[in-house]
Image (cartoon, rainbow, N blue to C red):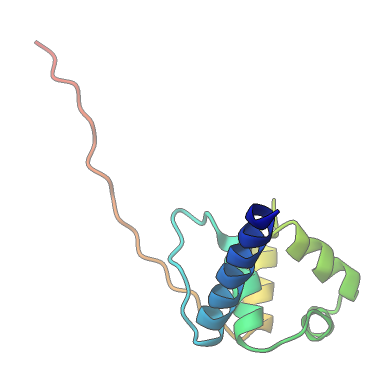
Length: 107
């Protein structure tokens, strides 16, 4: 009986710590845009903007924002991501790093 309760407590503690990092404006880096949906949600939460307010800014129904966030914006287009970033007044910068090419030596 204690294990499920302890597991729930640890999960809740991690969620609270994650929320507190967001409120301090601490965000994880993106790797090739992986995690973009999670970042969009985090940005909204960090700014204290409700789903209703974001929906108003995007001129969509609140249920659309709720659905999108529940799915972590899976399959979002870059155009839609830019609209959300604009609605949140966020400027996202990218850094491009070229990986060394794996060339096979021909003998």
